[in-house]
Length: 354
Image (cartoon, rainbow, N blue to C red):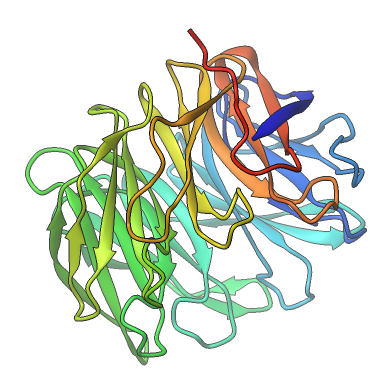
C-alpha cells in the first residue's frame, strides 16, 4: 500500500512526530522530538514527498511529545513541547516562513507529565493544551489567546492515563476528551464529557484493550458516531470501542497487530471511504495496517510495511500533493524518520517482514 520515499536524519532517539504546513508554502512539513539530545528536528517539505535536511531547535530536558496549534491568533501553527525531564511545557511561536521564536514561556502541569494534545476543548476559539499525568489525572490548560494560558486545572482519572484524543462523542455540540488508561487496576478508556462553560464530567471506565498506550478516533460502522481504537504494547493488541450513542462504548473483539505497538492512527488509507488502522510495531520494525470494512470489522492478517529500527510515532498527510494520504514514522534506534508514500492502487500485496 505504501512505498519508501525518503529517509531523514534526526537527533538522538526520535520519538513523537507531527506534520503541518509550518512554513506557509502549501507543503506539509515534519517535526520530531529527539529525547536523546534535547532537540526538535524540523524538516521543510518540498511538496514531492521529499524534505530538506533537518533544522535543529533546542528544547528542555528529554522532550517526549509536541503539539501544534495557533496559540496567538496569527494563523500560523505554533508549538507546545512536553519536556519530561523538566516536567514542563515549552511554547515556541511561529514567526512565519518556517521559523520559530523561543518564547521562554514554560507551563507547569504538575508531577510527571506523560503526553499532551492541543485542541479547543472549551469551544471558545482559542487552542488549549491537555496533558496526561502519571498519577491518575489529566490537566487542562486553557488558551487565552495572544500566546497566553490559564492556570493548569487537574481532573481525577480512574486509572493511569496515557494517550489522549478529543471529539464530540455524544453529538451534543461540546468537545469531549478521551483518555487511554493503563497501569494497575482500571485499564481501558475514560471519557470526559464536555458540558460547556469550561466544565467536564468524567465517565465510568470502558474496560479492555490490555495496557493501552495510544488512542485514536475512528468511525468503524458508518453510523455517524465517533468510535475509539487503542493499541497496547504489552499485550500486543488493538481494541476497538464502538460508540453506542448513549454515552457508553462497547469493546469489540481485540486483534493482534504486531509486536509492541507504540502508536496508532486511523484514517482512510485505501481511499474507499472507510477508516483503516495503522500501527507502529516497535520491536518488529514494521508499520502494520488493517483495512476497515465499514461494519466494525477489518481485513486480516495485517499488511506489514518494513521500516528502520524501533518505529515510534507516526504522522499522516499528503506529502507529495497527489491527493492521497502518506505516512512518516520516527525510528528511534537508527535516529531516522522514514517517509512512505501511498501507492495509487487499492488492496495491494505488500511484503511481510520475516
